[in-house]
Amino acid sequence: MAERFIEKRLASMKGRSHARVVATARGMDGVINLAGGDPDFDTPGHITDALKKAIAEGKTHYPPPHGLPDLRSAIAEYHGKHDVDWEAGDVTVTAGSGVSLFASTAGTVNPGEEVVLLEPYFMAYSDLVEYIGAREVGVPLDEDEGFRLDIEALNERVTGKTKMIVLCNPNNPSGTVFTKEELKGIADVAIDEDLLVLSDEVYCEFVWDGREHTTIASLPGMRERTIISSSFSKTFAMTGWRLGYVIAEKNLTSRIQKIPLGYRTNTFVQIAGVAAMQGSWEPVKAMAEEYDRRRRFMVPRLSEIEGINCHNPEGAFYLFPNIGGPSMGSEEFCESLLKEKKILARPGTAFGVTGESHMRIPLIKPVEVLEEIAQSIEEHARKITG
Ligand SMILES: Cc1ncc(COP(=O)(O)O)c(C=O)c1O
Image (cartoon, rainbow, N blue to C red; front, top):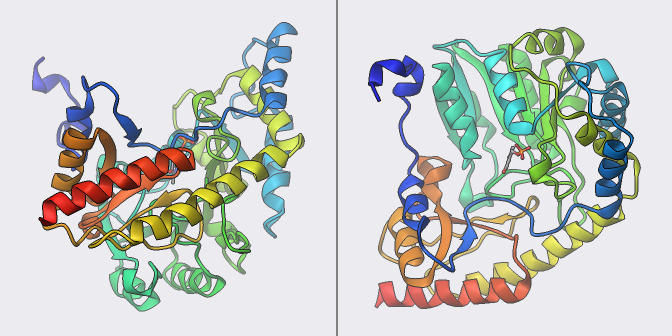
């Protein structure tokens, strides 16, 4: 295929560091796949029932362009519990929050502007910034302090070209749940420098040890400069349904809606989305409890391995252990772990340069399988260190 057929920005995008590891896994049998964050739970029955009913009732026609009014209201009401008032008109429904993130960045950031990413970050942010032709500015979370944000470090990286700070709260992959003080620090920078904050809140139902989710939009002066991106994928184990959304003040939302993305998410999926929001939240609670159980098992289990130190995440369902002990880079470690132990995990470098010496382990397997995984990592690390 002629290279000239490919649009310039796309053609110039660099490959991700984990691409080689993932490519190696293709064609291998019996691999334990930890590459993504797809929950191992089924979507709760009352949600699938609502979808079946909607189809049986012929709810198979075009929905309104930016979401069913009932769903937009239900989403606004749900996020209202985080101490900020939203209305249905502030919500745009999308086919998953991958689309929300695209719409939120492509609709606001110009080529040449700078976007601050807190490292380690969810890799899609970096791809989006690169695709837009903006510049990624990394601010490392301080691992020694438990992946905390140093507001001074953030302040130092903001320039006249900065447009947006991307905040993943709780953070994938470090599990950081940003404290009110950290959020206030980010808000002060955003207000002083007139910046937008893109707040990715897909893991907001998964916060541990009695913590509570705070959205930065609830801080004084932040509602008008925050874009919330979230989805049903993780909260309700609905990754295959593709249902997400953007929330922002109407004058921002209405502009973002102009991006010719063909929004209109499936009508019957949206109806099921209303059932998810308005039905029982017990299944969500049960999933959260199980993730937490896995976390409490796996963090000490990994940390007892010589050369590995596993930070205890405060939220989300990932571990990001420091594997600095085994004397090789994280990419090589993950590649050899795949070849020898058939475990596919993403190397830390997939989450920004400061992710070196780490790997990401999603808690999407039962405890028994997590024990097998830990055993394999232990044997592998021991073999490498000799
Ligand atoms: C932080 C974060 N945001 C967004 C997404 C995308 O989720 P979806 O497109 O399924 O809504 C993911 C998926 O892993 C994620 O980890």
